Image (tube, rainbow, N blue to C red; front, side, top):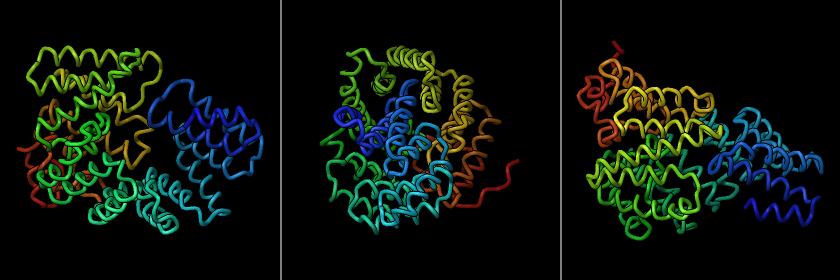
Length: 393
């Protein structure tokens, strides 16, 4: 998309909509896929160019909002921009979706559901809006509603089978705690497009429960397919820590422990390249913590997970980064922190599992091997039995 919009502005330098869309595409690239020291300046350049052409144009105004959202992590500032746009475009479904995204980040979950449902009424067949609504319904523990939306989305966008199947499996596992439901739901995806079934390593603490209950041979097949896709990037000389992460996990499943350890070390070295380039963020710290944990370097893993959880961007993102980093920290404390660490892990886990909104459910805790280090903790046993958490000692 970046290349397409660059060509558009080169062909017509006064095309304000193209400059606005270029800003959005660059901002999204920076946020989700390829953070770099140069992209923020490139986003801002496109924003300011659009504003210089017509500061009142909706695309120019939206570009400023996306810059605040995806580059500056200024969620309140971005929300103000999009709410201002709604005053002149009240029937714009995607704009209501943008407002809902920001309300989620800020922890205003009931407001975000209202915004997404309004967006759906205005544009009922938009796969992008349905994706956001799916994500939000699961987080709101409205699993039946999530299944309904996913069924419609699968009809409209069957080629995005990876998202549809993974999140349907997640909804069913969180609702029932039955691993077989997750396995049945992803069976067709594993047979047809195994790489699409592979769970992103950075999001494992949050969305990985349905992945972790899959049989080892299925996880191996998915990781192998995904690793093969990444070999092109590795051969080109790109820094791809995920590739080494997958190769190490495959070696673990195969019982090739020495190779696994060496590959974890390689993954850590790859992450150091991000640090040296000044590109590290809480996601990099999370995966580095996981690598250190796999190497048995428990104190370092806890320290890295704690740094991720205390990152300002993570602390301010209530829908994803905050719960994700806290779940990782709880996991590392449970594994490596001794009794005091296990108690601290429960202090983190109990509110996440019992809150009105959340990615961790009590049925899911019963099934998810991620929490095996806490199985014998009295507070964990009480939690998964459905009793209200007792006061921490």
